[in-house]
Image 1 (cartoon, one colour):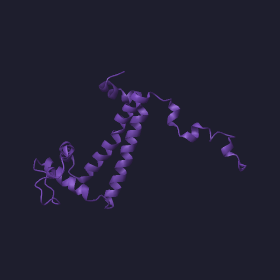
Image 2 (image 1 turned 45 degrees about the vertical axis):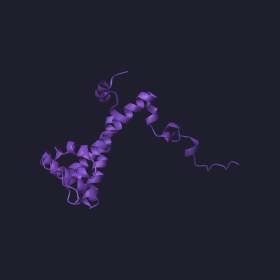
Image 3 (image 1 turned 135 degrees about the horizontal axis):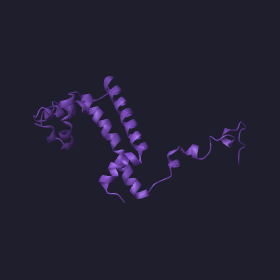
Image 4 (image 1 turned 60 degrees about the horizontal axis):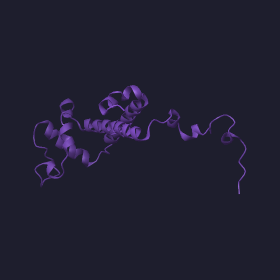
Length: 155
């Protein structure tokens, strides 16, 4: 059984479909969130975290104008991840950067779940990745589900 470090490093070689799925999911999530943001569907939470991360990226206290009674967003909840996201605002100081980071992090969370499940369940045959209807043979030529006759009712 490989160690965790080697398992993560060899994931790209062993499971290219997983990495392709993660990249596709991140792209879909990013497009959806960017379109939603462009059509004014983001909500107030994005504004709150945008202000907090902007403050941290400028090496200031993460103040948020919604929290008038608090001197910092950390007075409401502890969010250590926003300190890790602050350097992203040095690259592009825009709330859409948070949406892109969120999409990438949510999609990347599939890798540790996959590694955990593979360790517990083992390796499944590649046919398990096909949809169940394809595995059952429903789309094969001459199968009962594709015939033109209507099935007789069974009592």
